[in-house]
Length: 136
Image (tube, rainbow, N blue to C red; front, side):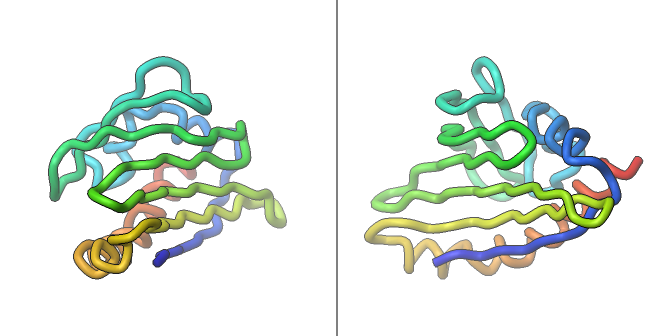
């Protein structure tokens, strides 16, 4: 099960990627994040924590970071993995941003139902927050 949203931002890829790389600052543009941290550099293999505004603090793993293109964070649930995928691409003087949440594993349908509607509602708000921060 997956949920996806996209937006065009009038800012270069580099500026948006810098907002992503500032993991401790995610709560400044994402209202669904209460706090976030990373141990080490913003790179594949790093790990950290994320505390959503609604829910418990969770360990996260940066399973793939491709500078100025994309990054994917993984969080483990019982018998389910959640992947938070973020993609950037230049598009006619703007940057196209795609955020996707993918549930994988045996209990993915259950978690998709339990928290999927909250994620679906939150994605456009998160992207608008990112747009506002990047265009300042």
